[in-house]
Amino acid sequence: MWFDILMALNNHLIATSELNGVAIVVGSDTKIPQGATVVLIRGTFDPKTTEPKSRDSQQLYVECWQWDESESPTKGYEKLAELEGIVMKALNDFGAGSNRVNNKQVRVILGQTEPDGDAFRPSVGSRTAVTVQWQ
Image 1: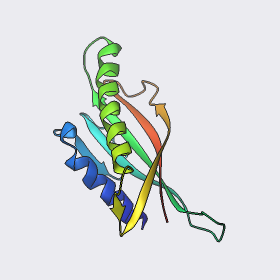
Image 2 (image 1 turned 90 degrees about the horizontal axis):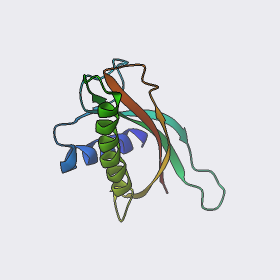
Image 3 (image 1 turned 90 degrees about the vertical axis):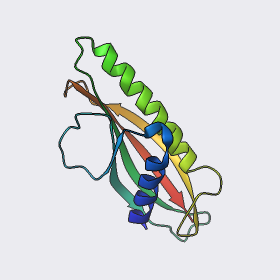
């Protein structure tokens, strides 16, 4: 089901009007994007156990990338912060309400966001751990 979760999230992000013009990519080719891009990467899978209230749990990594050639790193940060805000809202919306994948209700838990350490200028990026659970 992890692939179905990944593709449902991909489709949800593509349908998010605030992300029009942003490339949404499934899987990483290890190249640093040269424009506004969201990359969805598969993480670990924890299957449901016999414990009460156990759920299947898929971790994903959501990378946000922006491009800014100005001399001020602040401009790149500003663009990245705006993209991250839109993506975080879209991720929360994906897990809200009665959203279902394969007739299973999903729950989204946002984890820690790590910066790219400014190692890829003029691109700036971040990676957020996201857990999707279902029963």
